[in-house]
Image (cartoon, rainbow, N blue to C red; front, side, top):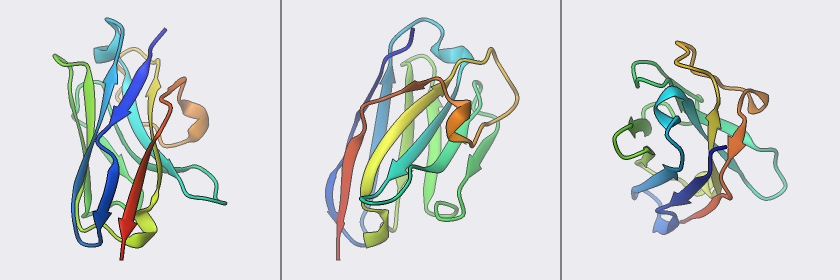
Length: 127
């Protein structure tokens, strides 16, 4: 079992930056692919970014490319999402997710690919 806890959310002005963190419990974190999703009010949860167990492969939604960066520190059991040039449309609840695959070379993008989810954290961008 893996427990995921997000932090780093909050209120920021448009054009600003935030770094989200996701702390994972369990000794197997370093084997898992990780991802970030978000859900805005009245919308479906959508993929933002994912990263393989070793950090060598990352994938991004078009809305995140060039502005967001996913990274991980396996020694700290933590995955990050650095968000720059934030826009009002980035306002959402952001979720961390883990895929319980053992050292896969594939960075997943589908909601159904992930096995564990955090509780989510609010990110609000003021214009």
